[in-house]
Length: 203
Image 1 (spheres, rainbow, N blue to C red):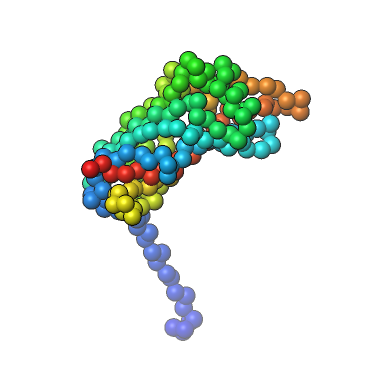
Image 2: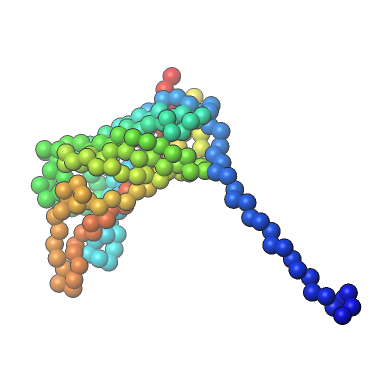
């Protein structure tokens, strides 16, 4: 067979995995206070097996310590006033504050205290910590995206994060429910938590 009839064997290229790279945020290292006026703490629950009901907490406070050079040393702390729950329905809010759910007279606050942080690469981070509801403390994992840093017109240095997590409310003793004639239950056990945080650097 002539040279033009020979088959050519191609050696497959070796794929080298890309290293996990995070932006250098060393300049952002410091202590920050969460700005409730420009932040939101919300949740989503499945209702009657067919739709999602969204809610939020109107009153909360919190602080962050960011270590841009070593994100694992970063921390977060949040305190939520449970009486400030808002789902857009006064009747539903009243039920959620009652003994069937949050018992806000007995347990006025929900708290989160971080126990670890991890850089996942790019703008993605993972925060682990202890979530306390109804006096019960259990671990939770929050996936975070860093939205950036800026100085506002008033001279405040701000950072922003978006976060999400999923929990089973039954693990915190939130077990009230009602069976549906068509099968299933009125309120899902799985709850999605959503966060949008703007924090101001302390002087």
